[in-house]
Amino acid sequence: MSPSPRRPTLADRLQAQWLSGGALSAALLPLSWLYGALLALRRLAYLFGLKRVETLPVPVIVVGNWIVGGAGKTPTTLALLELLRARGLRAGVVSRGYGREGDSVRLVSRAATAREVGDEPLLIHLRGRVPVAVGRDRIAAARALLAAHPELDLLVSDDGLQHWRLPRRLSLLVFDERGLGNGRLLPAGPLRQPPEVLADDHLVIYNAPQPSTALPGFVAERRLTGAVPLAGWWGGERVTLDALLALRNRPGLLAVAGIARPQRFFDMLAAQGLQCDALALPDHADFATLPWSADAAGVVLTEKDAVKLPPERVGALPVWVVALDFSPGAAFEAALDAQLQRLFPSRWIND
Image 1: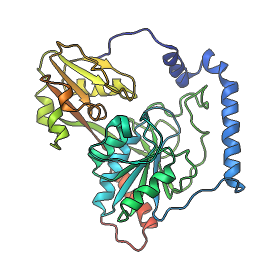
Image 2 (image 1 turned 135 degrees about the horizontal axis):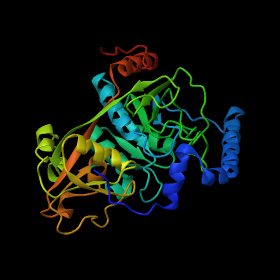
Image 3 (image 1 turned 90 degrees about the vertical axis):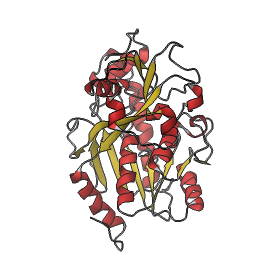
């Protein structure tokens, strides 16, 4: 299953060179050196007390990455929230809310729209069933969330690894198949920060079939767990594998994905036996205009896209939401338990 071919853009060429290098990447090296120098100065400002890490009354776990693009932070965050819930810990989430209108702090509610709070924070609130606050200032967002929900035991920051004002007691570093790319900093390469030796308060997760860097870590398993009609998804119905498999022989299906790496979604659908035309949209596509033709026979899409598509928008068109299960594995759970026992030494962590 492949998207309709289109002429590569400058952004496409640059992202290709972020993996292997090339003339365009080399030409941008001076800007990368400048970016690296600014990062170093910022770190020195924290080291010498010119800037300071803020304090919060509960521990913070940051889920982030060194590489730009969709490495799998949101699926990792959702999986982490389930593990924390299973251990009796009440977690809330803070996020910048990429792509939303405005930068002010806002508590996410079911009535909010992706345009107001961002698609990923809204998905985390709905799917993760946890309180979420968004804001460019994550410290202000964290304090607002704790004021509204003083019962929370800890906070999870969806992204924010380079937001050094934010205190963190544990960092989950997520990589996908790209690893470190060409090893260069932005904009000559995909790295947000230079690679560094990791302290004991870091865990590495590979959202890939195998490790893609030399860092020791845990390989997660990802699979499609099922499908549910769009109206049912908004109503809180569970996805089922039977509903997904029933789409195998449905003619004229269109698979739509407005995520960082849409081909991964298309390939997973094909692996389940679905025969679909593929429509790749830009990451965080807002669905202000429906991207399919009026004569579409049926659509399957991701949960990240579903949060921007209330059922009344699609009329009588059959639309199914396909969910992804992301499992970091038993070895990761054991490592997480050891970290949680460090963070909550007086609290019993269930096996």
